[in-house]
Image (tube, rainbow, N blue to C red; front, side, top):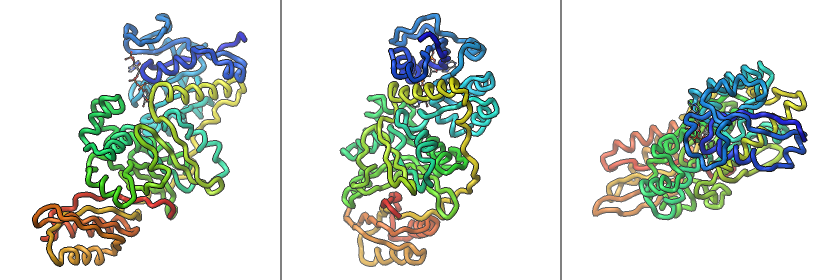
Length: 430
Ligand SMILES: NC(=O)c1ccc[n+]([C@@H]2O[C@H](COP(=O)([O-])OP(=O)(O)OC[C@H]3O[C@@H](n4cnc5c(N)ncnc54)[C@H](OP(=O)(O)O)[C@@H]3O)[C@@H](O)[C@H]2O)c1
């Protein structure tokens, strides 16, 4: 087999090294299907002297992006730098130069998806981003192509490994700080973990999933987002007592013609398939009207798992180019759906309220709930001090606006010391 398809790699960090390893090893299946060998011709890095732990020929490395973008022999550019600065400029330049682009960059796709997909479309070249959500878990192509006969009703998942690891450790008895410390020690969390624990990483991925599932443009800023840092060991304990686990859940569904897109801690029943997803694993649950329920599960990060999806995209980009059918990966957002304001979303809630332990307190709180059309399904009360009790309420499905108004009033009652926790509950089918 003499023909080669040349790839320019932008970045040789965690993912770039995995891509180099997978492309460099003998892969007869890919070569046979393509009728050509994939070859990495050039690699853009910041520091060519850095030790990479890989036998990368020195002459492949460059610090000059033009050595990649201006090389007419390079047909496919793989962007694994990350962020929306240099990466965005280089992706736009590569598309402008008529190259197909593969990226693992969720920030780029969630923040500037429209711009880069439009550039790919106008150039008639492909832009692939399977690794941007769930790393090696196939989800973008299944949603975009394999489920095309369905009307997707709901996409729900655990799309951030760091927070899932922390919550799994909290289930095992750690508090939030200890759990985060261990995640950092094991390399599952960055030194500055805020992008993950505040839910921003999950929001970017949810925006990408929702855009594809509902054919309507969703950016990170459109996703209602709460992180996990307020979750306490008591919440985890009460969840268990009530038959739930707490997960940082990504959720996208169509509700009364509007898109309801959210990322927040959620209690899900212990027997829900997503409850079994532990540690740094990811899983995405999709409901289609024809196919029913599907779950995609696997490692949502890491060098080789992510490279697995990137190289698959390279394969698809190469095949498109050989078949002269490039540019079919353009934006699928033909709808312009409006978003459902959080106040109008209906959910069940778990509420932890600290109050005085004396007769009549529960009745006072219950009256406020009643005044705001919040209907309570169960109550647990526990003494936590001489005169103080912790009261856990589970509500039926209520409008979030009504609940918030009730909680503001309850927090002001003289018998209440504070509303300590508010967590939405997802009970499965609606
Ligand atoms: N890590 C994962 O598990 C994972 C999973 C899914 C998706 N992703 C996505 O994949 C992308 C890459 O992540 P990563 O973890 O591989 O990042 P990383 O380890 O930080 O690697 C980044 C690479 O980009 C190079 N680079 C940075 N700035 C540059 C510049 N201005 N010019 C040229 N090269 C530059 C760095 O060069 P030097 O090596 O010379 O410093 C490095 O090789 C991100 O978009 C990320 O969100 C990552």
